[in-house]
Image 1 (tube, rainbow, N blue to C red):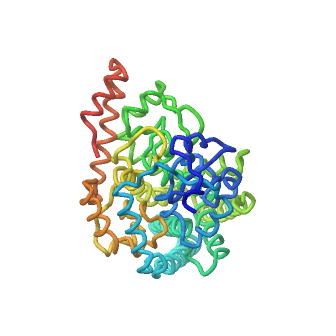
Image 2: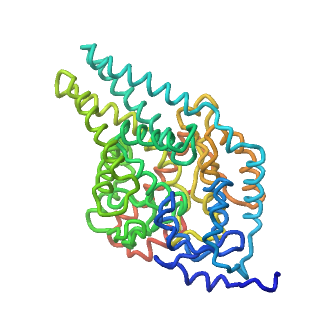
Image 3: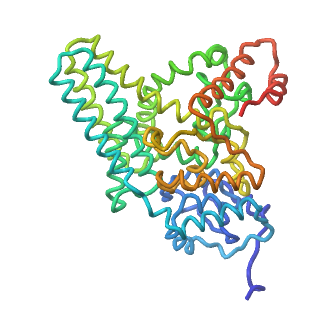
Length: 447
């Protein structure tokens, strides 16, 4: 029976990496996902990025055990001949299997319930304070509470986007729209599109959209080459405007984080009203319309324009804490150019992420994402389990001499500012040609 098997080599598999011709390998079997790409719940971008190689580790990370049954109809009949699994991957797969046997993926705790209670309470307080009080101080506090509400809403949207937090998939989808589109004004469709690509190509300068912030930020001087974003399909031009803005990015970092929400609103509209294929476009648009109905109405209930501006800025400023957290997790991590590769899943995640150390009392504030490496390795794992697996992940990193970075919130801020300052000083030096910048960067890499 073994002799009847048909084999292809890794080099032959690499040839099937184009739209309309997408092949992948999972545990030695080769699958044709060309027609399935548009139906893939995680979007087709992931498959485009990983096509033509073995994707076993990524598949394990993103899919529950029930997903394996759907692979049969995609099987090409070929097996991968010469692929060797690294020792790190072997350990990662064993770890994933052990966590599954312990039932950690099913033990979801009460995080979602607590977040819903917090959101409901804050929403009532904000509306009551705006409508019933004439105090400027109360209105200021209401704006801050609205920011906290948006943070909790984002965590609900994030969790429900990675795994099922509700009793059924339909309820889970509704929770995503309510928490994302209706409550925060940010489309869950946009979030899935960018976030899944980020997870797969963690800290790839040309594949990870979460690092592509030209002309405002550049975490690496490689951006000075005006590299092409594979995700957005356009050149990230390092022009005089970008050079000027990046030259001062370590000063503008926090102010930009305060107004960063405006960019998320814009990105949501650009996607939903684009020609791109958007899952549940109508439902997403309806959810956004709900947000842009209640939010302006709430702001308009404040008595003066100065209070309205104060209220919005207060909410944005509080929400900036979450934007800062997200950037701390990756801005000072190691970066690379090119697509994600098949046999270094664990290594790339470890190199590109940074954990935030904190006490258990602060877990609610970070939404579990202070354990960023753990989350990237096991994105389907409920947030309440991330602290549990942290020592095991740390030991595996130590065993294979891989980085496991865990800094305090303050230290992580300093690390990020150092990274931004390093690139900023190089951007200011108009006399330095790009090759010299890259050598300088190699000698002065932070993170």
